[in-house]
Image: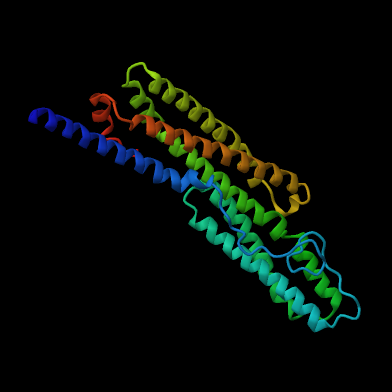
Length: 284
């Protein structure tokens, strides 16, 4: 009786180890990546748009009524340039800190933002020297027509970061597929095994959708320049739709893994599977 109790205690300990590892898998890296669907919110201080007096207006260059004082016009143009400079600085920081961008994507985005930052900085230095409303209108026109910070550059960076975050999530799932498959294979035929296999097939399908949809969307967005406006809007909208769809796919994939975890950690599994999973690492 004592010997049986000791054996059962050993099995229970092994099961506890397995469950702890699998819970770490579900709550650790998966939460970091797939829990948010790859979403990255760079635009935390988005201002109003769509009106000629908005500092964030990025479609039509402003015109100043003749009654506008030179000082007031210069103040407005200077402020509009400042909010663009600030936004570009934030975007540069987001690009630099990203852990998922490829070197090529990082270089492309850095060049896009850097070119705009240099141009906006040059325009800002010209404001104080403008001697007429027409001169200030010319600076404002260049600010919008040549750089499109809010309508092109900003969303290009935002969407690109989201797409590459999602691809990193998909790569993580790919990395644990072999371990999941091997674990399922160690269990004989049964209802739980069939359910785990169905979830695994669904997992493969969800990740396949992401890895087939996100790369071409990223490629299309990374090709955009300020001069792509207004046609850029269609490309950006399509890429955002891809981000939303892939976010749903990744959320479903995470649910699939969580359900598989529950099946693999359920009572009654044979000791072979328990021992096989003891060395499993969610970072593999």
